[in-house]
Every structure is written in C-alpha cells, then in structure tokens.
Image (cartoon, rainbow, N blue to C red; front, side, top):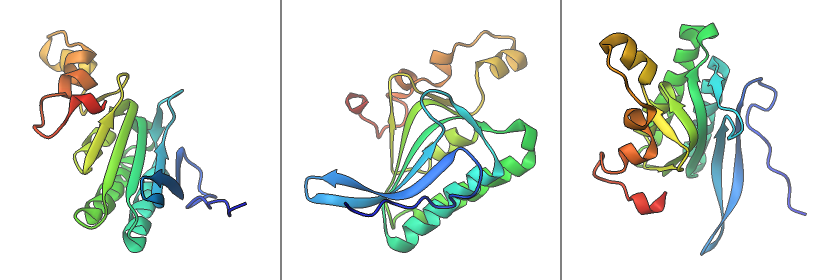
Length: 174
C-alpha cells in the first residue's frame, strides 16, 4: 500500500485541508497540491488560520513545482475575526499570485464563493463552477440595501450569469 499523504498544517484548527495528492491523468498519476475549502454540505467562513493554510499550500506547490487545485465552498471571512481573517485572505492571494506563470492554478466552486473567495477566482488559471455554484463580492442583500433595487442571486453571480462575461470560458465544461 502506498504511503498516505500528510496534511499540511495538520495540527492547525480550521476548515481548510491541504495536502499533496495523486491524480490520474492520461500520462499516469500526477502529484498536485489539493486544497479543500469548506464542504458541499456546509459552506464555511474562513479564519486567519485558514488563509495561512491556503498560502502555505501555494508556497509549497511553487517550491515543489506542483499544480494547485483548490475546491471552494465558502461564504468568506469569519466576521467574528474581523480584519485578521481578511489578512489571512490577503496572504492566500499573495501566495497564489506568486504561482502565476510557474505552476498551474485551478479552482473549482461547488456552492458559494463570496467576498474574498470570489476575488481568488480572478487569480486562477482555470475556474470550474458547478450548476449550484455562485460567486460575488457583494451579494443581493447588500445591493438592495445600498440601491433600494431588488437583486436576485442569479443576476448577482451564479454560474449561468458569468458564462459569457469573461471572454475566456466555455460553459460546456461546467
């Protein structure tokens, strides 16, 4: 039996899990840095520790020249942590930016990618959104509060609303 992969920062509390995993390709197995943010059963808020784990995963992937694959289902920074949680997201964004042009970055969204996670999508080489996913920096409730105009989640950023907006996507892949 092959050795089991060790989770990065395994002793650090949080909802982000990062480790090197092997994925099957047409050329055989390939190691990748796999980062799971939240779950499909329950979208999660992220703490500073979670942002630091994502950043460490990106730095390790860069050092080992491994593709980064991130699965996101998150409603953004934990409001109880205030600016510290946002700092964690900044660290994650900075580390992912360092990967640009050196190792591929892929983000899959299955559920929400709200606020900071939505911004991370713009740093990836490839973004895959499922039918139940949505992404926006400011959601329908905030738009309604500021403008007085009703806004629906579909218009605010579900997969169908972004299918043709960036010029580089293919809706058939979703």
